[in-house]
Image 1 (spheres, rainbow, N blue to C red):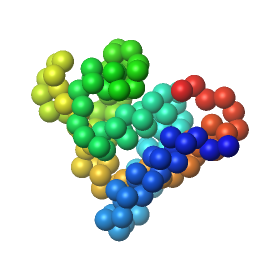
Image 2 (cartoon, one colour):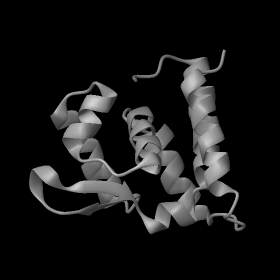
Image 3 (cartoon, helix red, strand yellow):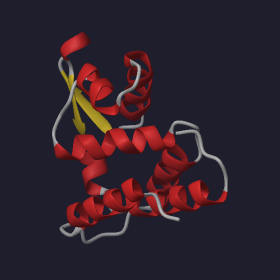
Length: 128
């Protein structure tokens, strides 16, 4: 049974990646697979990225949209910024986050991560 949200994510990535005509390098694929499928918070980070593909948000707005604790979202944002998948403009509370040019360039690699996450969710219990 497929997760409807993951199917929606795949469609969104497909439309975003139509302009990208290159394959991501091996290290980028490994990074995305690790961040989105190899750790407990991968699904949450994927949800954040999918929101940021639509428009920039600050941490509070993301916590409201995801219906999650502010501190938990703040943690995931630090992970995404540290790994150059998300960039931020501004400081402290009002800082806006958006998709980095690195992730935009390698957006096709997200499809593979979504596929793997979907398989993982179908075969065992995953912490969402």
